[in-house]
Length: 242
Image (cartoon, rainbow, N blue to C red; front, side, top):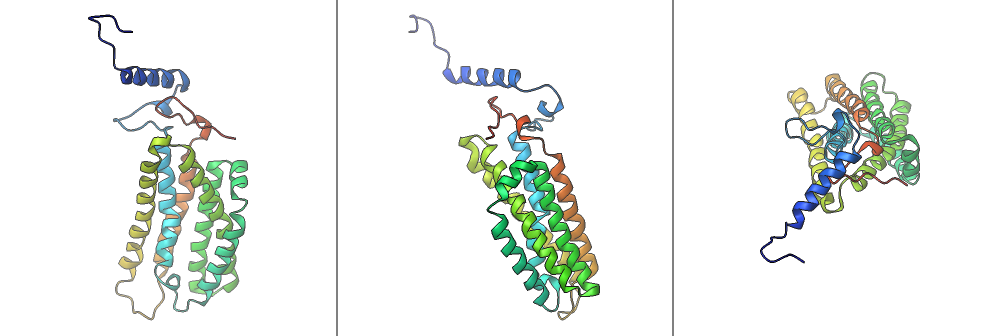
């Protein structure tokens, strides 16, 4: 009970102070937990989510842009249709086990593995431009089905476990906004390189090389993530893993 003439401090102020103290005592020292230029610290859920969003921007985002060209930029869609059939059939099966695989490998390896699958998939299109190797492009689709299942499982693990309960909607919005910009910006690559190409011609090598580089960068970017046990929320709580 407050004494007469004494004001009771706002409980919100105590909550904020407690949160700062928990973060101070629970977070290890080091640059990962320091703020620079007012941005979230590196091992914060916000920063890690943005990194994952850019991995998907560069990998599935470029995949969406590539397939958005119709037939993957090839004159005949036969090989691409077969590749995507293998991709989604494999994706459906691997998806059942992707959670276990991600928990075993860890988020960084799982996301990087997924990124390499997209890189190989794009390389198959580049190869098909010169060799018309039907087997390679179908095998690349099969591999990507395995990789994509693991990548999206790792992404979902971060999306659902990193943010505080009250902020999940905002985190989901940020992720999907960045991810879908990958398809938008990625579609500018073939537009700029093939705007003067005849309609009955296939996409040139430069387009596939650009996608190849971007997906490779996305796979490498996954290695910049920190382990889940190092992530500390602003209230001092940590990620609980089973």
